[in-house]
Image (cartoon, rainbow, N blue to C red; front, side):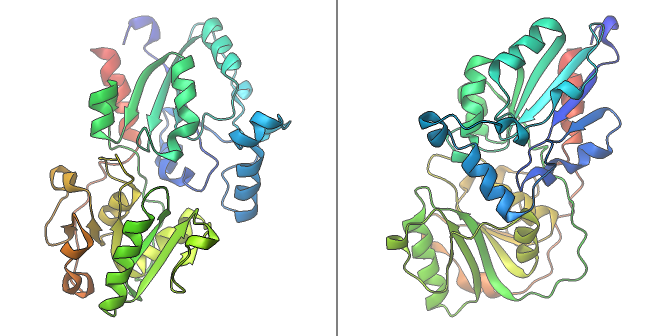
Length: 328
């Protein structure tokens, strides 16, 4: 990092969705200013739903709803200085609905380097808000949790995007397995797995969202119920096994992998690349290609789990990595 910019400022634009807590460690990093939207991080279900409707791109392509800025951070609150270098860091959800022209104007007036953290793979519906920004704004660095995206799109791989924010007391295991996720091309596979859960008389907490009424087959599955991320973690803590199922085309780990490692839970996944990830342990992590590959006895078996997690996923390491890259 050059001498004239040896005291840069790092600004992290926080996502106000239910996943904002995964970057919580940055609030305790003295190098970082965390910006929340005027509504603060959202955990209220109604506000999450209202934000989703208000900022929906399909709706806004028909009628441009006013006041969408209430859901975004206030970069205007920063006392910008022309003598300071700034690193303004977004994740793939937090950048929308900040106006592209405003971000370009800031970059033209001040020494600003934009950084994007893709904590979803490129083709994921969760990544959709970021894709148009990346094609219209200059980003100095784009980090991704997906190795394939890193290779194909010249992004930088990083798994530093998860904060342990819940310090639960001893949780009693109530379920053999839990799953929480979107449909988006996975429904047939999720139903096949659920058939296996039922036929092996296992208990489960199974949530799928974005499922049409006509596609809802099972009374035991909870459909289209959006819950806070804290509730997702609490349910995982009550389960013996967390299940991870990748979106079609995805190769990187999902949030389920990080939850399993950070909260010491067994993981059932169809991500064959998990064997190359840190903390992989065949006793704690089982990989399946097809539902018939699943070892249901292992799912039911209760064993002590300890990945000896060392904090390497903390997003504070993103700041370390940016500094390292600037010094090269």
